[in-house]
Length: 618
Image (cartoon, rainbow, N blue to C red; front, side, top):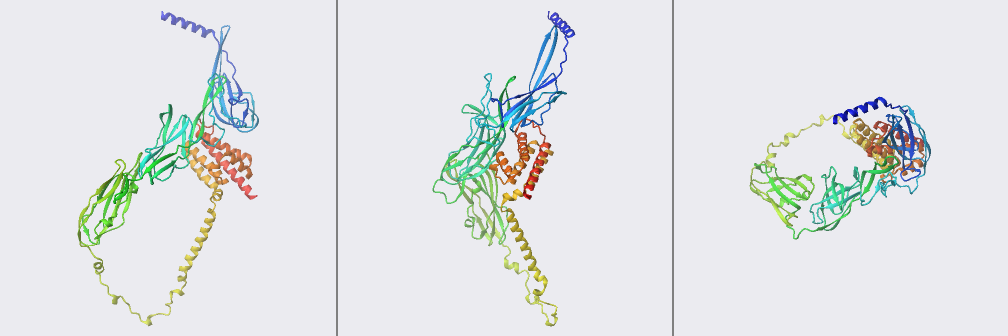
């Protein structure tokens, strides 16, 4: 039964193949412009779209290299369709692909784009008008089919990082300490933890260290290398510990820890509605400035009275001694080593006064100390070595006493002690100073030589009358004068570091560009983009003597325009910044390769240098 059905299907298929013809349609290309989401017009700073509809052709159009009045952000295939028809027993088929160029409007005016050629077929041209940016323009999403999403209310068409203070529901930081009530000098762990719902974290950088008022700080390298997931207040976040410090309070009372600002680069998902494909999305880079919460730690003093032999240590410690020498002679130096091991404020533990403990016949000198300390995830641990030299002054038997250190242990809340063992030594007779000098008697009479006055020649003149004598004074004086003049010139040149850096801005930029070229040779795209951005931002900051806080694109445009730099050079510089930052922070591939961006950077900097020299010559 099943075999008969299968044979019937084969027969029908053979009949259709023999009778159906699929006529060939000529390929065509059509362009159309789509307005920004939620808008009926295009404004400067907004994103809009040009769609390519390629019919009956598998040829993929090239990425547009130049779109008038706009910067290309993305270009990719966004859809496809096909249709079938049957007329009088003849079946025909047609298919099409849609490619979308996502653009950012940057210049006011009316522009024309096209025609473009795809597989030998030319498209139509499209005309669009870009108007002035309005204050009300903000990112949002279209309402459509109940699937639209409202954009973030803080979203701005701005290139500088957005300041979100203590954070929001999408990203925030939480600072925490291991204990809120501690003893003075007790070790605390201060951590900063990131919580986010964004798709990807590209960069986290601190503008400065937190302010630890009244603390000694040790930075720990034990931070998160990858994201983990945690549920906080009923919502799941990707989390990571981005900073960890071991802190030791140095005074009693309420001590405050002020959180610092972090710059976090993330990928934010943007949603838009396509008339054919419905709701679609893509990601855009976003920089946020966020600050963790401040903390207050209550610090209490160590219990009184403190022991007389208290070494200043708070934690858990032990001490041991090591006397390697076995043969001791008077007036000959020997050494004894004390090692303090443990966990806590190890760097600040002090040894007792050994000169007061040792017998007066043993002269003890100041030690050489060596620290081998590591900062872990919860405390500071390791070993501190004290190497003492001592000299027995007389022969005989002596007792090197035990050495005790007393420390405070926060775990038990008590003072505890550790003792290094003592030694009994026998000092033999050594050489004295007088014996050393008596080894070779001095014969003063034989050392005198008697000269006859007749042997003195007239040519034996006083040294002060010879030119060699005066050269000893003249040459150093000349060298000193040269050094003073050189130093004054150096000081005058470096008195205004901004002016100094401005004069050599091109040299500094060339150094950074060489590092970018090295990264390009290694095919290290991330390092290349980083070094190229440093070269561009560093050059314009040095050249214009602008602090980092004022390095905004609008400020740069204004200052360069006031200096008389042509608008074309300014636009080229800002466009290059956009391209490099897009290449660095976007998950999509840039339309520009590393070599193209590198050559553009050299060209832009050379153009600026020529313009600055021209203006200076006037």
